[in-house]
Image (cartoon, rainbow, N blue to C red; front, top):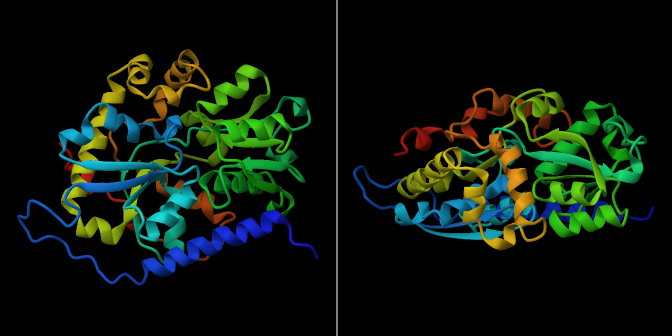
Length: 353
């Protein structure tokens, strides 16, 4: 039987994660917390963070913190790098190439099922901010995920949070996940091209890509998780998404640096609440809205501003929803005892200035 290219890609993703997990479990430098009263730690305020799509509005706080001087105010030197898929950013963190990941919290639960201790130190989004779009020529043919059998579905990449959510929505609708074809199309121009060239029938993405496809008339909205109501309807409850997550060993070894980071993000989340979408957009680099145009970027941001967590505290009812979603299809967590309290901490947020 001929190997399907998607099966090969899935194997490669799994292999990369497995290698990273193996490396993470063989650290030659076990975590040692600074002595009480210390003013510095091994990281000494220098942090490398990889974000699963820096120019996406769902990850806006990471760059905005830099733009408004929040890192500088804490004496931090933060290096931000971009990786289109959160799963690849996670693999880089486990391999020790970066210190933390700007990605969806559900990866911390997935990794817990694989025996890895990773925790979110600040929650930035209370809803996923994701939208399932379908090609306009399929309107009337695809009315819900129940119509996905045999369809090509665009995701960021295999093993990503969009992959998780796509599989959940299919399974929830009674569709066998082995009958759908999940294809990694990232976001932005590559996802738009996949829709326009009919390489995928539907795709899950965020702003500003959503606005671009709606403006051109190439797609329509099938499911919208940019609001609390839309998220509850699709996923059954609150679904905390974007967070900064790190290996628990790193957090224990560098609590001073982590506290400064969380201080910066809590300040940024409060800044978002006290400023308009226009004021926020004015702070962002021009290439963040070059594709859609600044006016459309601002309009989209204003409409979904409610996705941002105003406090940084993990919504208490959120983690159980994340686990419930993953448990429906994800073999990494199925049948496992997951201690959700070990997958996040509010300690640093509560101590933030």
